[in-house]
Image (tube, rainbow, N blue to C red; front, side, top):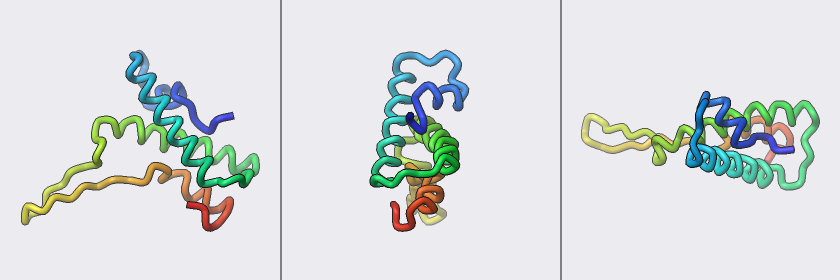
Length: 107
């Protein structure tokens, strides 16, 4: 059973009337989260409690991925000297602490 799906993400971000592009993007985000979790677990089987926690975290990460479509390269900030800074984030920001607790060294 997947940790997160495209329809889960669309419901979470309150996209009530998604079009085919929304559906495809949500599915891509879910696939990316699933693949990243699978890679990080590297064959380790989480407990039922850890799975429950991963499902919640995966939903949060999937939603963050979905809304990043509006800012694909992160948030842009320009400092007082004109220096440009982009703020990005890790794909599994919410899942990483759980994955690390399952098997230290994951990630």
